[in-house]
Picture: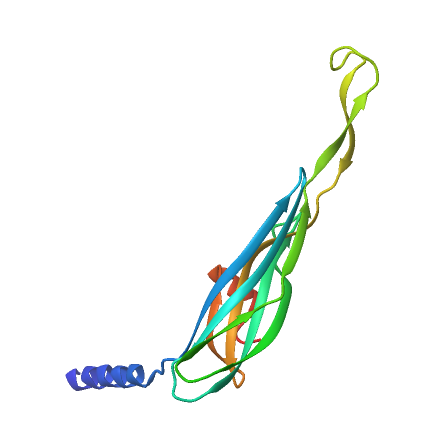
Length: 172
């Protein structure tokens, strides 16, 4: 019984010792701006992706980036935009890659207001009356993700929210 337990412990240690650590790492900074009007918000976001190569060989990598958001009427997360960039990273160096700007506009639900004619207090022939209802529309940016691939294999990744990775899957 003891010999079996020792064998299992040694086997586990051998498997752990064989696990490889990726020589690549990724860091992501977001550049964001928001323009807000009364019921309309426009978001612009781009990513600065810092890819480091800690190996002794140059690497040609593929960077997949994703922007996530949801619609104005639902909270269902969706991939709003995705793309690919390539980076040639020298040994023991870091390369910076920028994504194009992603823009999303959200119009909140509201009522148009109209000033009524005539003087007096509100509700007595003058003041403000509610107009027609304007439905919510557009999209809101809620997160982003980056995957670094070397020869089709994901070697590093970052997602602003861990749950967003499920939207992408492993190395799509």
